[in-house]
Image (tube, rainbow, N blue to C red; front, side, top):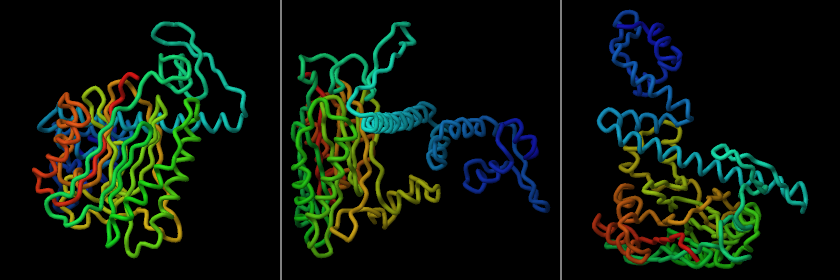
Length: 384
């Protein structure tokens, strides 16, 4: 047995961190002296301790660390997939911040394009990189295509289903060549609220191929505020809203509530949005295990929604670089609350087109009892 001091040195975790991980159930000691309360650890616990240290080193939240450690004990490949999924989300969020920073630099610098000389580390060749982070390619962030024309477009499908329990449809959705949106209404006028919110987003004009990421996000944010205003006056009613604008090389995303956006890329399935709910806030704070969240009676209690109140909620905004072969899903919680992520991923990865995939997702929700309305939009990035 190792004392907490010896174990701290061997694991490169501080004694304070070890006590914290004990309190959270991440790394309880092998034995606690009943008289002194002193903690002792077994040498076999060093592997788990080092795994926790590495995961914290890449910035993984404690709640996700616990899930990965639990997976590693029985399914090492599952733990590896969870780490890949987490890091894909980090890279996506980093890319969004990079584009926003580049857009801000452009705006402050003025109309002159900023060009940096970069060296490709794999080839040693010098390339020009513009301020929006693209290299080579066209102004819209794509590679190839004729002048002014994107090399890739979205092929989309949308499905709405009332479900097997609800008496009315209160979800709404839109899938067009440049706009994707889903909304989940609630309250006596929830259906009208969802339709009004999606209708307000439809007013967003198609972005020019040369549009900056920041400008597209500004337009999206303004549209979300307009959507909140459109919901005003519908007594005790409101809606969630998840929407994306396609620029030809990027997907700009705005999100309020607990509808979701996902990306399927090369077999990896990543959620692009975070639920604005009380339960998700507890999970993020490490106060609730993610596995327990689905069983909480208050899991749908929203922290943010469009309800036409005195102050419009701040939407979660992001920009995601797209690649040919990417498949995006926007859906309401009539699907995500009843179907595990693995089942949704399998339906999306089945090798069928957007229409068939959307039908399969509705069927999946129905197989699980269909307790709520379902809205889903599937969009593939394909050659123009």
